[in-house]
Length: 505
Image (tube, rainbow, N blue to C red):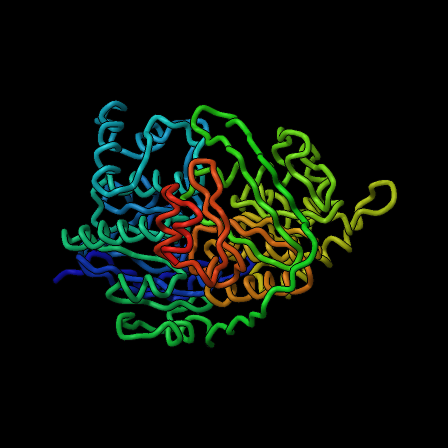
């Protein structure tokens, strides 16, 4: 059988790093092929080369046995290659349907594209409203738009870069059914994920990259998580050391928080009650788009419209305080959107420390450039961020490495309260273990930590109590020892009550 896709000796050099070094890879029709590697190993660059978004310095690509030059994503799609990016390529001011239409054959009308989106999203269980404007969508909803856009092209090769990072377990199961259907129809799938369980359950082959080079090809179904981890990072991730929480005073107190939505497609917060104590981690689970983003904006100060007295920090009313004032009182936050909110893409890592850290600002507002660079360098070294130094632009980092830097910036501030959205989104297993370990250390040092995540495994691993957000409402909390994945999954539909918590546990 002729391979669907062959890469031969692909090399790509950037000023600070060789992203791909003599990489060869073969994918057969109907094969689901994982590409595994730690952050900065060269996976995303390789996929962008296949998709025509990046030009290789050397090597060749063969598609269905024929040598091809893929000079743009349009040429890739014309060949039958589609890609779902980890960082979304959507225009914020256009609707979902208009974004999809831009990448398709212009022989289809916008109305026809809208109808096809409804059909495909319904068939594969990927809920998408084609008439929603993208800037009103959450991260999870945007990812569904990207996946549906790729499926509409009926691809022969489908590239998925961290496709399940913001999907619920139920949605992941549906996606896997879809991918297996596509593979049965002859589609070759390249699958990038740091979730080793997914790779072992879904993929037929796995190519491992380290430092831009291929270090091995295995059948992941015959491997364990530990052996895949060793291939990827050279060792197994450290075991998290957990101790029973030592609870302190109430740090963050939210009572009857009601907040109307700011756009027609948003979610209003309704009667939110939450107490977060020093020395504990509370995890909030839920399907993306159910009000998590609105809640974190209200708690961080990005949205200061809350009723007076509804949010208190160490007993003081902060409902209408701005983010800077909240940081002065010890509350720091990590947003779910890395580029644009967590970091300014066109600024260096040193400059990005100033977004939330003012250690390098001297009297009169003068910047201590040396201090900025020193802080950035310390974060790079402590969190093993692969970057070209403190002067590297934020947009030059891989998604996982930028996440490590942003998380490190806020953890290193020694906050009294830390709000975190998607702490390990797109981060490799070693770095994820480090971040989770740092959060537990913060908790043990007396910090109150609130984590919003769509990775249930992560929440069960680090949380002391769990809550679920659905349709702008927050469930009662349940001790993690009494919770089950099935129970939390059911609560994601908004079906909860106190009795159900004990019965289902």
